[in-house]
Length: 272
Length: 272
Image 1 (cartoon, one colour):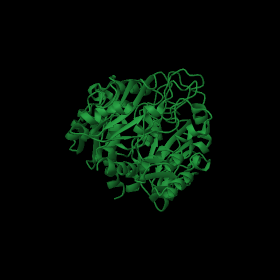
Image 2: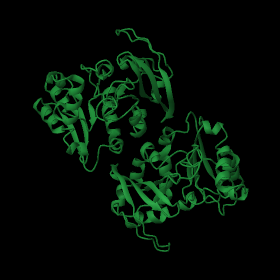
Image 3: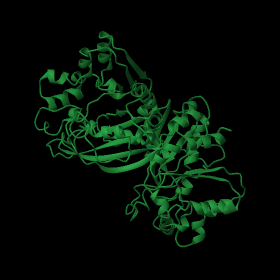
Image 4: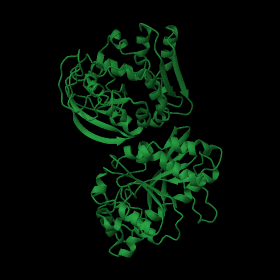
C-alpha cells in the first residue's frame, strides 16, 4: 500500500506532488500525505511525510529522497527497510546515502519499522518486539493482528542487505517475534525467513550483496546466522556476494562506509 | 586544554593510546580519557571519549575520528565546532564527513558545545543559551563564569564555516548570550565577534570558505549577518569565498552536501 502511494512520485516525476493519484491496475485509494519536513540535500530533497495507513490503522511516517533527476523525469524507487529500534529517521540522517542516490538518480524510501501509538498492551515493553520491531510480518495473533501488518504495508524488492537476520526461525529475536506475532505454527514462520524462502525461490537470477561486520555483537550472539543463508543459496546455486568486513560492527558507521556500494548495486538494475 | 590532550593522538600516531602525555612546551596535565564508544568507519575509527575538564570543572565528551593513516603516522587535526543545541554526536552521526577525512588523512575532533550538568540556575531554560549553547566564550559573569569557559577549552584554528553567526554583537542570539555570559561591556563582546576581529587581523593570508543556505530561516531572521563579515573582509582586502546555496536550509542535510568541499579545503593546508 505504501508502494501504491509512492508510485505517484516516480510516475509523475514531480517532487512537489503531495496528493496521491491511484495507479492504474490497483485498488483505488486516495489519501492525503502531510509533509513533515523537507530539506534540500545534494541538489535533491529529503522529505518526511505522514499519512493514515489503512493497512496498519494508524498514522505512519516515511522518509523519501527525491534526487535532482526526479524534477525532470521518472526515477526508479529503492526501499530501505531499517532494523530493530529504528524509525524513518535513522537511515536518512545517519547513512550518508544521499550523494550516491543523487548521482544514480534513485528515489529512496525509508519507511518506519512498526505501527506506533496503537495502545496495544505490551507494545513498548521491549526494544526487540512491538514498537520499533514490526519484523515486516503480517501478524495473525492477538493483540497484534489488527495493526502489525508490516508485510502488507511494505513488500521488499531490494536484494541487498547490511547485517541481516538471515534465519529468524533459528535465532532468539526471530523466535520471540514470530511466536508473538504469528503463534506456534512453524510453517507461518518460514514464510518470512530468507533462508527458507530461498530454498523454494523459482529461479536463480538473483544478484545478492550482503555486507556483514565481523565485530558485530549480534553476529557472535547467533542472531544473524548468515552461514545458514549462504548454505541454502549454495544448494540452490544462487550466487551471493557476502563481504565479512573486518573490524566493523552493527552501527550506522558501518552502513555509511559501504552504502555507496549498495546504491550502485541497485542502480545497475534499476537504471538498466 | 582539549587541544593539549589531543596532541597526544596526532603526535603519537597511535589510534589506541588512551592515556595522554603532556606535549612539550605546555603546562603539565595528565588526565584519563574514558572511551565511551568506538566504531570502525571508512577503515578508521570514530571514537567518543569522556574526560574531566579542569577548565570547565565538569565531565566533557568529544568525538574524534582517527583516519586509517593515523595507524602508521602523524596526521593533522581539524576541529569541528558545532552550533546551538548540538552535542558531540550531531556532526559525527549526521554529516557524512568520514569518507573525505579518511581519504585526506585528517583527524577530526568534534567537541561538545557547552558544559553540562553543572546545576547552574537557568542552564536548561532556553535552547539558545546555557546547555548546548556555550558560544565558545569565557564567561565573566555570575553564575556562568566558573564553568562556561569554552573559549579556553577550545581555540579554533579552522577558517571555514557553515552558516556561521558572523556578527553576534548585532544579532538577537549574540546579544542574549554575550549579555548573559560577558555582561554589558561591548569591548568584551567584540573580542568574540568575527566581523570585529577580522578588522584588526594582523595579515591578509587567510583563505576563508563559507557555505550559507539561501533558505536558512536564521539568515532571513537576521541572526547570521554574513554581509557584515564580508564587508569587513573586503575593507581589509581579505579574500572570502562565500557560497550562497540556493534552496538549502540550516540542517545537517545542507552540511552533508558540502562537507567534502570543506574537508578538502582544510586538507590543502594541513597536509601542505
